[in-house]
Amino acid sequence: MAERNMINLTVTMTKEERKALKQMALDQDTTVSSLIRQWLADKLKKEGRE
Image (tube, rainbow, N blue to C red; front, top):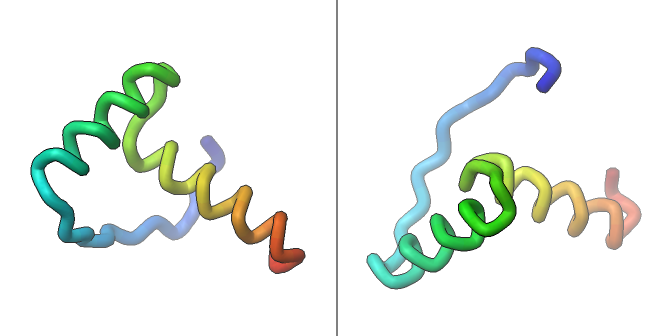
């Protein structure tokens, strides 16, 4: 990944949600952070706000 100004973000969720998110990332051979960044990029693109 190209170097960017990255920040840390705290998200509150249940243990079950965290487990599901970690499993989704594992299934896609990626990290939770990368999964969330990709979700956001897809959402912004869909809304024309790239």
